Image 1 (cartoon, rainbow, N blue to C red):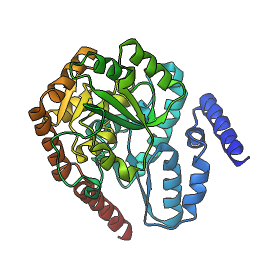
Image 2: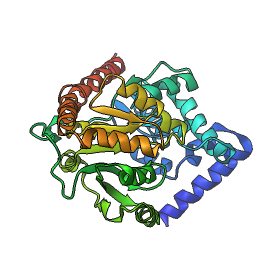
Image 3: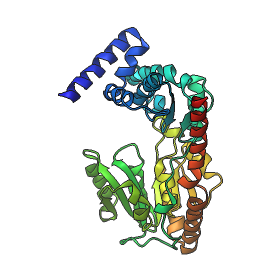
Image 4: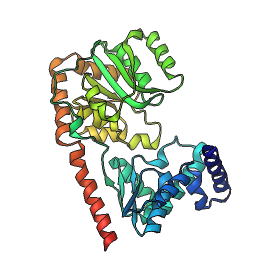
Length: 345
């Protein structure tokens, strides 16, 4: 009953926003969770309230006002760009713009999960460029050291994980690529299945003759992802550039797999291209949805034990020395200290 009432408030607020373009309606129209978040945040006195999604921004701002504190926003994605371009999502985009445009100028700071996301927020709202805080993980979750190759059987192995195994992730291209690769690798996917998607992947795998090379693994706890990834040879990220955010984000799987010591084979979306410039052979590119290019890139590593070992060593080094929470947390702690110090003054 409570969920239904929250959902009803969201729908009515969204319709009111569509008719009036009054920004106050956007606060509740973006998400059914905004109301409960406002109530929960107001009950807790803090020096700093940090919102992680647009739905939480009104809650953080209102709680900060009530308790004489400050609020901030951590943008994991560029939320105006979460959806494909076109008129179908104009009302939702309008509400997101209204919420972020209303509250971001008053934030103590804004952080963003990639340089492209930081640039997009600064350009869209005229706020100072957000501080980049990458979505990285603790060194304690890394394996003890690099290994020459993965140990998963059957192999050679290509690994991908996400919350949801579904469309618009380049997986259809990956299935076709393993069929064309001379190394004939096995593709391992970890996550929860979107309805009907496994059947589609299996149809493709059967068509191209690799039905027995497609493996689905169960979801796992976030703290286990690096340990679980380390047994595979290479990691894959095939983002298809289907939304503005998809073109500028850097997914958490990139940094999780580097920490696990897996070289990355990634699609040539703009964020991946910039990221890969300095990190060959640990990060290697292929054109979006180019089956032959992906197959060739896979073979370049999987048919050469020496190249694979070098790429895995380079990936592990990046995880240990650059892309980990022990390094990134210093950025977060510094910006939080400055924000809370200004509150005290």
